[in-house]
Length: 383
Image 1 (cartoon, rainbow, N blue to C red):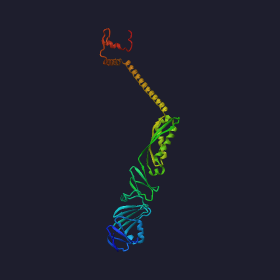
Image 2 (image 1 turned 90 degrees about the vertical axis):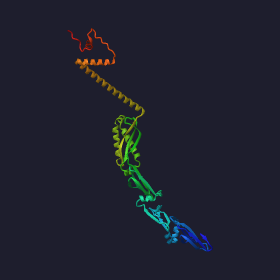
Image 3 (image 1 turned 45 degrees about the vertical axis):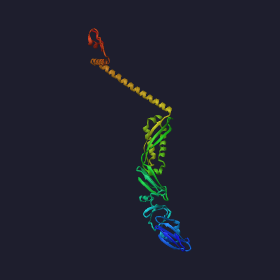
Image 4 (image 1 turned 135 degrees about the vertical axis):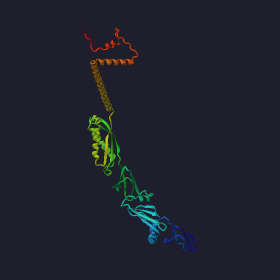
């Protein structure tokens, strides 16, 4: 701006506008070009503004609109959001600003195309994929996102109320003026380890039992409505079941009837989780831990049982061997030829182990006399 004696010269560039005020009141708007203004008393003030994709202060706009509504409508695009309303402002076709409820923003429109897309989030809190791409850089505090995996169930809560069950995939929701929560539940079978619980048997023997349970969620909506913590609730339920089962049995019954005990536990737990949306697929005793002195006694009993069983088997084998020898002796007694064959077999085994054998039959009767006199089945009859 150049000042002369009575006039003022002002140059406005392309992409700019000048608000000319006289004594603080808006007089007119100067467009690009060179302007000569008569101002002998120095009462004119020119304020330069860049008008390409820029904003204008909302409070200044309110004053200007009250004084010159025609000029405000020609120069500016005012965007004001209401309750439960989101506005996406695009400048020259490019999304630039995301406005939340109860906001006011003013844009110069003399050199920029201003487009406004309004979204009523009260109708549907879900964010469209198109809108999600438009507000990529401005999501914080405006939307919430959740990714539901294939093995999960997603439950959508709006202001604490269950609205729907979400399919697997990516989901985004407007959080303006409401509370959005997505709860994800794993539908795969899960293992729960019930650690050692010390309890008394019917015969007043203290022992500790560890168990393993497998559960899976079959009705996510019912689970969320009835059970705050599935694993903790099932853990306590199995504890009660095993205490009741062990308290009514002796130690021998607990150790010997594991299959019956497992079946009883499964029936007890399944009956109580039937209406909760949780299914218990497997439940069983993993380990039974006895006190040191009781464990030693049990080990001695087991060892004694094994020794007795081994002795019984050895006696049975000895009896069978004796019976076999008796049967062989009877056959030899009835059949002299079989006895002779047995003698030859014994000699053959003896020859295999001895390098040299000298036989003396006596009386010069030879080898036949020796074999004849080795064994006699019955005494010779007197003449």
